[in-house]
Amino acid sequence: MKIKKNQKKELSQTERHFGVILENIDSKMDLVVEGVGILDKKVDRIDNKVYDLRKEMDYKFEIVFDELHLI
Image (cartoon, rainbow, N blue to C red):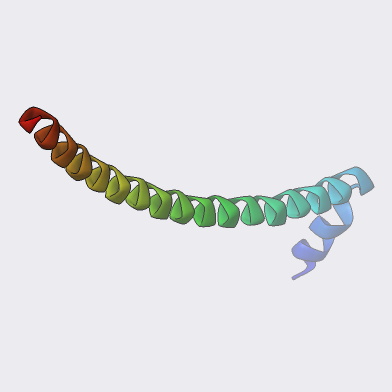
């Protein structure tokens, strides 16, 4: 146990400050990762809506073209 106490005392103020900064960066990176996950889900939902809209438009254009051929 004395070794651990000595190691803690050997850390300079700059090293402790750097450790605090790394912890802060780590917590902010966690927020970024969470945000990217949420955005990914939103993009998937929008992609599905666009796909459904595209299918509907294709169907309606097909009907319109069929009617135009009759004319």
